[in-house]
Image (cartoon, helix red, strand yellow):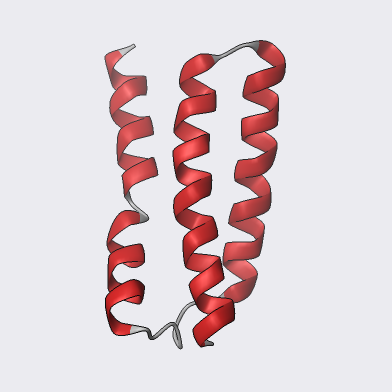
Length: 80
């Protein structure tokens, strides 16, 4: 269980440095819009799946990750 929690924490928080960098610099030139569209879609499906099976850790991890990747995608669409 601790390994799963550590993995979820690392993969979820891995997007935080990119959010901070893009937010501060207002530059998203080198970010792939396609990758973040796929990531946002995938996290939405994981969130839905977690909700359907009642897996709270899966829901929480993907809810946070979805917020981070959606922020990056939004910044990419806004700043190009």
